Length: 197
Image 1: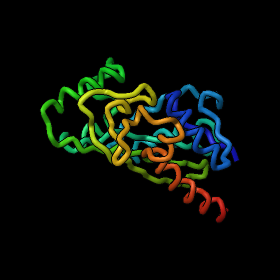
Image 2: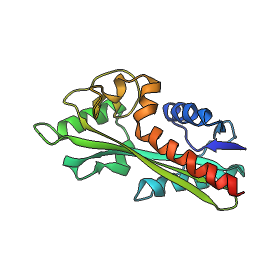
Image 3: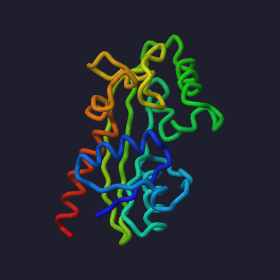
């Protein structure tokens, strides 16, 4: 069975593909499926947004579609930026601009606990849904470190490891990240679902 990944984010596509292909799942990008759609993320939760994207891709392609919605939740910001992580500070900001804004908001803050959250949703053309969520705890650094990853990875210190998410190799990141944890939980649920089919 082939699944379409409902994302135009190249870095996220690479991460999703790397992990899903390890599970023996055949995945293509939505662009490879002929879909240029960027579904509007109007949900109030990560699940809502992932469902919006997966449903749109499945309805357009007629294939089961997998979508991820993820973000950073900072304790001192009452869980923000949360579902607005990608648009934090406005549409015009780059990843480094968003990181600078986050560090500015936390300037002088002693409480720097945070977590990355990822929700994976698979929407099947018959309307069935399989979903899972994963987290990665850590804290916000006082300055960016590392050149890998994307988004908030350079300012996120992974709990217990001593490295920022951007200092991890792709294999190390997939082993501990919110998306890796969500995808491993998703794999189990998807296998259960497919075995019932």
